[in-house]
Amino acid sequence: MSRVYLVDLGQHVGQEVVIDGWLANMRSKGKLHFLTLRDGTAFRQAIMSKKEVSEEEFETCGRAGIESAVRLRGLVNADDRAPGGYELHVKGFELLAEVHDYPIAKQSSDQSGPGPDFLLDRRHLWLRSRKQHAIMRVRHRIAMTIRNFFDERGFCNVDAPIFTPAACEGTTTLFETKYFDGQAYLTQSGQLYMEAAAMAQGKVYCFGPTFRAEKSKTRRHLTEFWMVEPEIAYAGLDDVMQLAEDFLCRIVADVLERCQEELATLERDVSKLQAITGPFPRMSYTEVVERLNAEGHPFEWGGDFGAPDETKIGSWSDKPMMVHRWPKDIKAFYMAPDPENPKVVLGVDVIAPEGKGEIIGGAQRAHDLGYLEDQIAAHGLPREAFEWYLDLRRYGGIPTAGFGLGLERTVAWITGTEHIRECIPFPRTIYRITP
RNA sequence: UCCCCGAUAGCUCAAUGGUAGAGUAGGUGACUGUUAAUCACUUGGUUGUUGGUUCGAGUCCAACUCGGGGAGCCA
Image (cartoon, rainbow, N blue to C red):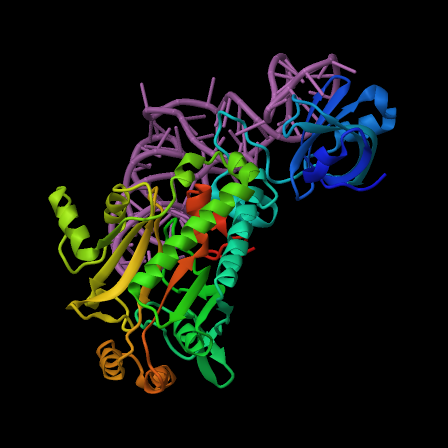
């Protein structure tokens, strides 16, 4: 008799097995206990009949509270009445850790659950719930797909530093920290380092945490989030748009294939995900502005899109929308100017469907030394901090291109989660740094 | 930094300025196929803090504290 994980229960029908887990829920009906077990791999049902266990085991189990740790021995049966199709008929019960006051109560169908602050204060326990478990599994699958996708395409993983000497993009607020006798900042993007790496390795990506000290209080913002940033040497805007499209299609396809149970738990409308196939619509910024105005949604050329604008743009397609060639004045200093129109730069934003907002920002990088020097000065950035970056143009400078994808926003879109804070294990927001 | 909203039982929320309520969770009991079980009974309160108006404040006013949504900014 061997210990078995709940997810593998179906492979042991007719066998007697041992399950180590926790009591996610229990319903008692007279001389029967229905236990919902979880062990990290899945949630499955066990049934304990009074006549098949000792009096003491039956009573002890009946008194055990939610989240008690239990070891069960029993026979695996296939049964259509059991969620998941299989259940354990208990023959032996051992209470490993008794719990009677678990702080997160189960919710009833016609009542709303606990509020966000209550649950976030107990995030270390909330992670055990079905929904949070499913979201973390999808997050894991996306993270694995990110690494697999780039590895299969010959990208080298070159990670960027967390401590940086200055802003990568200048405009956004950085977290400051002491660094021995001096000062350092937490990275807001690994991109500049990826440009250096791309000129060493050809095709590279970094994948790690990123920090923004913006005082944003919205469902789309965290102060610490994960970003994957590929960068390719000898590549342009069109290359990077195609890469982003292939990348998103692969992520969606992998989740659809390997996270079916999680998507069901999350009650995700999978038809919305099945619609995510190439090609994605591509519109220039100027075309978007013209269409917005044509549809009675006034918008002046030169501004950045707000949330209502993004929602409108997102409504034009069931697929991610690629908006390219943005006004130079509202984009970062390093973006390459469009040779056909000096007022715009070769950048692209990808707006996710279903109102989930921007998930990708990318660009072809300016490789002309003089242009970059002018841009650094025009943005008021400290020239000394960028000397190494300018070296990339002095020594073999060629066009590189890449993008950044926000992991949590992608998880929120694919899982259909309203708040980004549920898409990272321990969220960091402007008012929260615990647990 | 700005705008809007909120704070009442462990949790989610009600309560014309006039006795503090319900659901749920917890507790006790019943039930051999439950699916977030059901049914009966039951414990549970310094209404965020401070001050004010009033015969009387959960309710009206002010300030403060904490939080939520959004703007800006961005992944």
